[in-house]
Amino acid sequence: MYAVIVTGGKQYRVCEGDVIYVEKLDVKEGGAVEFDNVLVIGGDKETKVGTPNVAGAVVSGKVIKHGKAKKVTVFTYRPKKDSKRKLGHRQQFTKVEITAIKG
Image (tube, rainbow, N blue to C red):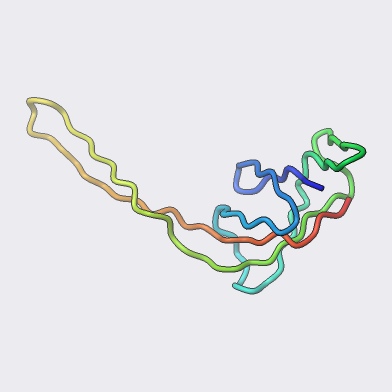
């Protein structure tokens, strides 16, 4: 059984036991999280497609850890003007293990 969930403005296709990296959630490590914004639930026999969400569907997960991704370097320059700027950014994430799909 699989589901398509939305969190942090992105869509993820998940199955039970999957580990996904999502935008940072405000849940402590080891805590439980529920995703109720479920677009599709599919299985062996039938597929439920929501309009826009599947009614009563919930995907449960457990927060494993929080962290920061690798640094992305942004370098901007204007040729022949002696103007340049170097910036870096590290996006925060939450590592979640999917424990159950209901619906």
